[in-house]
Image (cartoon, rainbow, N blue to C red):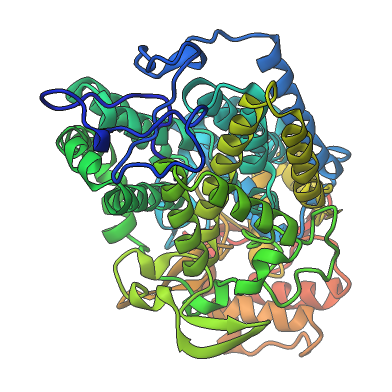
Length: 631
């Protein structure tokens, strides 16, 4: 997901350098002069000599300064603006337009803290979807952020930990890109700032902040991409391979999906480099292959068990609900504006993307024109040609299996149709290929900005024009604060820990009615200390069919209580339904059934009294002790 390094001279394998081995200095090359085939981008510090440091030139030797602190503060302020409405009432509001996604991720953070406290399996649990459980690796994972945030979760609760994560993801991703760009790619801190700003605050990551912290947690991505390039350029195979392997293993426990997209982006960079500079690419190949083998060996050891869990463990799945085009973008979305952009509106993205979370394109015409102009202006740079190829290819992949015309889908096959049935690709959310395009465009903007600023002494007019063009392109896509909505209430019986006197550790508390998200919110509020039936997750269709689906089929008693709660039937129950209710309590391994305040509370109480005997009020719920039927 990054581009070939722009700061290092590749020494010739043997003998003197030839014209085809190097690309002229981008700061001094004559724009009218054709460059040699197979040239590499070489950045030269002042004085015209090739960079002598391992990572190139003056930028690589920079120490942290007040300017870096200012950049970090600006990114943090931007992240707080995006998430501001959630911070106004952490325990009373849900941030963004996808409340169920936030609820699930809060539960994931709660379970991670629970697993740390009790030394339980972080990759599989029966605390949700009791008793069958949930394969956490085949869902979003997030073990590393969950473990790192476990003190915060245990002290301040899962809602606070979630908001902290979603905020720091934006700021951290932006700063990580700024750091790598300013130290290893460009001389100008201002250009690096723009690149980091785009990578973190473009519509892609802002839209995913509606409930996908595993997607926005990209703070390791630029470092992994940089280490791949160091390895290919002049790395020590074993040492740098181990460093790369450690970073990859860490990213694995942040988000397997982002790691897959990163690996795919790096592969595309390699193939594009082979296409535009084959001699250089082949010369670098042995070091790269050797280092990747070392990294792969380390990653294989560290991730062996979680990989088994993901692809062969209990409750593993293949694919996801719906075809790939359900989650695909329209080609025209790249020139529209996202819902949460300054130039956007609640309807601006309607029909152009799958939902308000999957808006990984939506650059607007001005930015598309600016990026195309920058790519054309720097077209002699190998790096820019590679970035351009990767950006365009991933944009085309993001539109799904068929081409689109306007907001309509045609029957003409599109590039993703060639790979849709390959392993892993069948589980990809197609719109997320746009995340790779976003990174490629962000790095391109940094390179173009750096090139412009190098000419400010000789051509100040160009600098002013470029600044105006950049503002015209970037300001319209700057993010607005995400929406927020009222959080569903959780009974005091749960939040105050009163449940502890009625449910043994690891046993199940059944909320009534048995609604997926009610189970999730109750479990999260109790830091996953008790199990809940059903929930919000991806699971296989059945024990014999691993095809992915949302949730599971509810038990008969759950359906009965849902129908009564909805007013679709009365409170009368048959002996068969009573027997089934007691069998379901046994199936759930339940200790208690709890009924909070409900508009049809009397009817639900009557059903539960008939099934389990008279209930009693405890705190703000009615409670039925079902241990006599479930032990």
